[in-house]
Length: 148
Image (cartoon, rainbow, N blue to C red; front, side):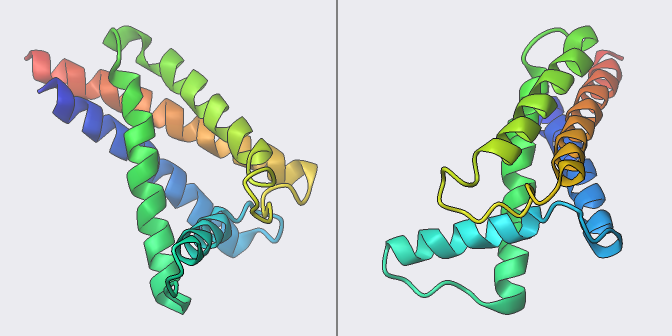
């Protein structure tokens, strides 16, 4: 059951993060464009093995699915420890992911769509933090339900 709790909490964090990213990118001109980073990474990966990357909507959907899956796996680490400490772990995971998302794209050879302004960088960090808190809260709830 613990692995289901971990998966569920990770998925909750990933979906919270994706929901805020997708909503904001449609409403705020300076919003982080994690979708574009994901698409760039997929294109780079395909080209590194001399393969033609998907285009258009297929590329976008693959990037979105990849974000949800990878973020769910990452946020599932909130389940490593006592449930009462899960939100604290979520905060740490969210901050680490947000800071990494701001700092790492350029050294990875990607055009950083999240470093356009200080506000964009702050949104990036804040939204990953939100995902971590959501994952931690979900783990606490799922653990409580499992103990019944």
